[in-house]
Length: 305
Image (cartoon, rainbow, N blue to C red; front, side, top):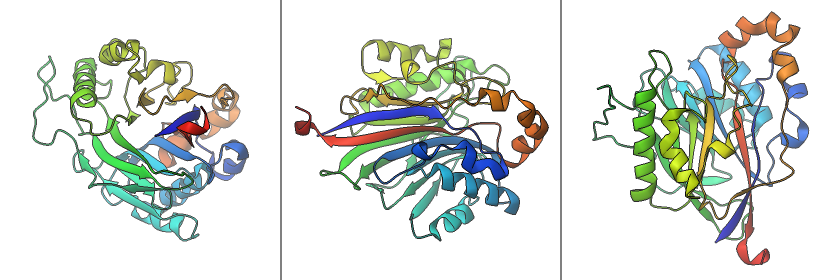
């Protein structure tokens, strides 16, 4: 067994075109030493050349090992993967969910760091999961994979990853999100094959909201980290709220948040003249969501005893 330490779990600002290098601190760019997981809703991402160029540039700076992406059209990330792999520093592979039309949940992962242990598929494919208001709980089914970290570890580390894009707040939708949370909790407790689980994506409501009571109850039992892992005060949507989150089971080998966690403060940029000037351009060519990144380090358990 390995110990995992969460080095940071923060929101990266969307780099504003030619200022990308200035807005992603060097110490927080992806490295060979850690496993970096990024979740990002790239708002209606289709394969338009200008957006491909911009998103590729941003991903080069974030340099994550696994991306959990939302609102991706089928095939839209293929050219981004091709461009990122041209450097020879990565060997990204992309897998798209099958539901959601042009706004699918998508995994993109670096074969140099991790491998998929089985086919990546959507959960709950043969079920009808209906909320109290009579509507399907999942407008897009969660994407699921079992992964193994093979780079820079003495022993390979296995974990399960679920990517979500839950019901939006348009038309309220809290009943669907609550039902989705109940279903995910049941899956963690009864269906997950590994005790180490990460759920990442666009939850479409801040961590403290009433629909997350199923998560709250599990967190109170010490079985997951959710509300404590996603500070409400850190916006991930440019409207000013935290919608994009990462949930981990507490079994992720006694995961802990390092006291040296670095918080990237972008408020003065997003509230200032620069953002006001480029707001519509950012929304149109990048996204209205910010990437959220967690960094994991690994060590043998007996080395810390």
